[in-house]
Every structure is written in structure tokens, then in C-alpha cells.
Image 1 (cartoon, one colour):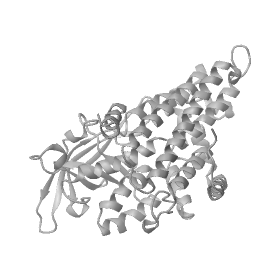
Image 2 (cartoon, rainbow, N blue to C red):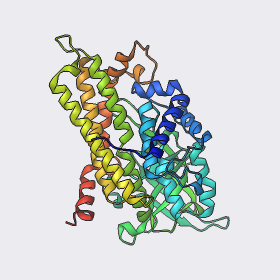
Image 3 (cartoon, rainbow, N blue to C red):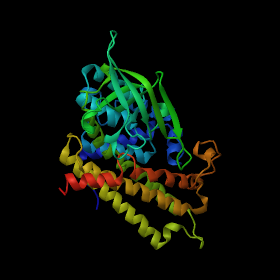
Image 4 (cartoon, helix red, strand yellow):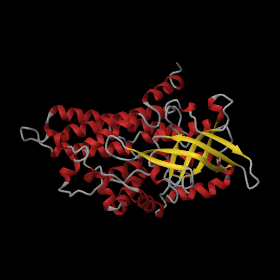
Length: 402
């Protein structure tokens, strides 16, 4: 089935495609297409290219410095950027804490923080999960005690956060902390905005299966947070956290990522030879497996468009859990099949290649190198942002009513 577009949507898609082709830095594109690691400067450069063109916040309304695009335009933008080899836009500011501050933050927070997110003048990270408080987030132990001070009241925050993505680059963290231990767990949580550069904040790396360092543990030892840096009302952090997670889970569907990885998968199957000397893509069983994934991606895309058209600019609802599950499963299927095709040529733990320090010998090598590491890394998609089991519980309660 072929999706159809209005003339305006086709023109918009062509405009985005032309812009990305002309302006995406080649070194960043090559890293993405070779599955090599990106660093802080890579993300920031691409954000600022988009910002200079007025596209720095594609999901935001115009009154907050965004594009004011329709949900369909946002999806088309994502697909074209990913297909061309652009890195993902950092979700922590644009898709997570940004929308929360727009809805629940003070005018001062909106004026000071939102413009800096678009250019990544501030790099944000998410302080949610803790050891023992991942899926059961309401059991978190990090404490924030309010302290009266003539110079201005503040919270004294102590605790530990874990699986904190890219915290090694972060200037700020949006953090859930318990401000009232004497009420039911959800009612005693607040959301605080923490400056990561102050004393008492320690970031320690967690090495993952692909040999990388995208996640961290963050220790908070008597960290001072001015009362002005609370989001909304004290004790309402659980409400804000759920609002944020709806935006996060919709993004985790990874439609643009799926389109790009399908393209890489097909190229890899066409270049890789079987024992008979013929391209693996000519094997009927392999074509069938690739076709099944392509149909899954098409179904995910149609579901995303249906949700976008139905909800418009309303915040995501429980359908975000459906999108999160299917997107995670498809991303894992793509990575698994890429590794199977690469076979012994997959270099799962070559640090020099992953860091773009090794010599490059052509597109065939680009597609096989790091395939094993990519497979290992994609195992996390069904865990972060709420495990698949948690998402199924949400679907059962809020959609099926059981």
C-alpha cells in the first residue's frame, strides 16, 4: 500500500530533502551511515545548522520559537532527515522537558530556558530511573528537603540516578525527587531543574554491550536547587512526569530510524555474497524476511499518521505505548537481520572503528563493521522509556479497559 500526500505535503518533503542534502555536514552523515559514534560537537553542529534555517524546534509552536508545523510535517521531516543520515535531534530538551516547561513552567523559565534548548546552549539529561526504581518509578528514593534561607529558599537534593543518557555532556538535569515522604508515593514527588556543573554532582560512566558509554549513573550529594527551579507545583511531579513520558514514547517509535536502517539492510544484502557467490538479496527466504520488516515499517508509519491526524496538537495518550512497543520491536528486528547478513564480518567490539579512528575501505565495510555492536545496542529499546511489560499494562488498563 502506498501512502498518498497532498501537493503541499509533497512540496514540503522535497524542500526538506533538498535542504538536508545540501547542508548536512558530510563527516556527520558518514558517521551515522557507518554506525559510528557521535560526540557532543556532532549533535550541536547539526542543531545549529537547523536553527540557522528556522528549523531548530520542529515540534514546537511558533510562540516558543518552533516551526509551528503540522504533525504530518513533523513526521515527514523526521523521515527525510534520518534517511539522509542526519543524527537524531536531542530529545531531552526538544521532546521531553521543553513541552513540560511550555505547559507547566513559569514565564521566567520559558523565557530563559526554551531558546537555549533549540541551539543546545544547554544540554539536558533525564533524572528519572534509580537503582531499584526503574519500571516502578514511584518508588524512587532521591530526596529533596526544602531549606529556609534569608538569601532565598532552596532544596537540598541527595540520591542516585542511573541509566542517565549522555549525562557526561549535560549542563542541566530535569530530576524527579521526593519532597514529601509522608504521603502516597506518587503524591510526594516533585520535578526539579538541576545545574549539573555545581559541587555535589558526580557522573560515572556505565559501559554497555556495544562497548560504548551513552549511559551513566549520577550521584547527587547535598546539591542545592533554588526553589525557583521547581517545575510547577511541589508534589505534582508525577503528573508532569507522565506528560513528559507520552512525548518520549512517541519519539521512541523511531520511524525515521527504521526507514534508514531498512535502506542500509537492503544495501548490505545486495553487497554480501552467499557461499554460492550470489548476493544474499537473491535468496528467496532472505527477501521474504526483509519484506516482512518493510511491511511492519509501513504499518507503523500508517499508525503514526493516523494518531497524528486524530490528535493534532493534543498531547500523546495511551496510544504512545503501542507506538513505543512496535517501534522498539522493529528496530531490534532490523539490527538482528543486519548482523546475521554481516556474519563473521561484523566487528562487534572494535573501538577504533566505532570511534571513527580506523581506516575506511569502502561502503561494503561500512555496512558490516559495527553490525554486532548495533545489534547489542538495540536490545535497550524495549527497556528504556518504560519496558515493554509496562507498556502492555498501560494498554490493558487505558485502551482495553481490563
